[in-house]
Length: 320
Length: 320
Image (tube, rainbow over all chains, first blue to last red):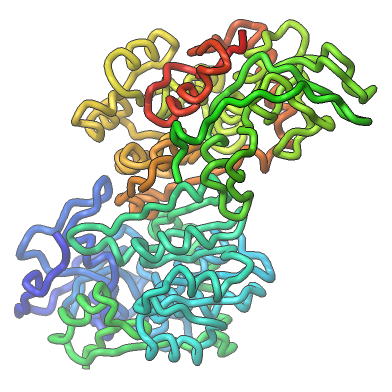
């Protein structure tokens, strides 16, 4: 079952009180992402769907406003997967069983959720850990105007690589060029495969894919020999019926490697990624491309927009 | 364009004479395989289709019967991609630009083409070089009654792994069990996914895929975390329209790696593979599962059978 508007309902509850070892987090931002979808549909082998009536959960950035845990003093700014509510109760870990992540001094709260959160860390791990990017590589990035893609596009030049983006429509493509992509492919135009081939005439060395489906299918044909495909996400798969791919025989013909990774399997690498990303943020090498909705009630539409191609940069909800 | 019966025609030519540095090979066996398909359809970025009227080429095992090259004495038994004709002319390399491969003493001529040829070497490279098979792994092998699959199934226990095969129909499944597979999945039965899950209850650690299409799609759902998929071949893709896969989002959800390899990219590793395989043959650890057609005129049907699921073991043509 895909995430739909009817999965959301607003309700009033009391502010929680922390038990021993617990803290109360006041939310300032929510970040809708694929996990909201997973909590509705369930994720085979990982977790069951949330029971109807359960408080929706998701990415949250905020501050600890009450603490019964000396390790987590009041005022600490943190992120984590917590309740999509004004206040969340936590024992220092979030719903994914991961410790709350502290937002470093000098970093904006929303950046803790975006560049130092799942979006930025996925982009960093994908490029620097899983893809073995080498200077001179052409890196094709789908979802280029989205949360992960827009950061991956800015990280690619730091690895000496040339970022080529895929996005839908001339407006998004133009904005991505302004944001630092070297060339853009418009998947809403009819000649997807030809555009990719023209944008990467020597073949795609790395395809950093956040979408899947027809985009992945088209890119497989244009991969360079020994190319690498990173399956970072698959927004094309969040609908009721996933879109198929036909061209995977190119895996053998071009000696390709395709790798998928699940963010929460690599908590041990988050520290290094967050440290490097903090430095890049402070140096101004990464500018966040944000699309901020205002107010608690904007949450459902913001959450759904991420799966409909309606996103320009990182969609966040700001709780005013 | 797929390989069809009409692509074949028999013609008479003279026996060639070797020029300086050249040898004449008398064929004893032909081995139909995916390359025959590629020479009709062409292979993007690798070579163009053969012009109509060109002598069909393919795997050949035979002996040098005339030599004008002191490095290649008469009587040497060799294999290579040569003309599908009684006699081939060669300068010591074959149509793939690779040196003719010498069949070692004590090894049958057909074994030079099968276990020490593309089938055996692909199985060996796939398991021992690309898949990083570890003792205790469950290895699912499609095309289990085919050329590569039947050898991979016998190599898996040498790596301490458990081979589970996929083949079509009770007869082939039963024969594969006799040949050493620990369990079999019948893809012609309606419950493919359930059969795979039942045969590998802890998940598939390695899927050694020679088929693609619906089989790959079903296997993706049953992969173990951090599992590896080897795209060794894709007989499902030799028809006019390749069959699609829908489940590649499992690449990300299960942190899978999918790797394809092209045999001719790894000529540097053939030596080690052939040496180990020669040893296994001499020790009786590998028994060849052969399906031998007799006579030159049997060639077209033999070549087409490999793409229609009509093969039990390695299809060869014996030139009587």
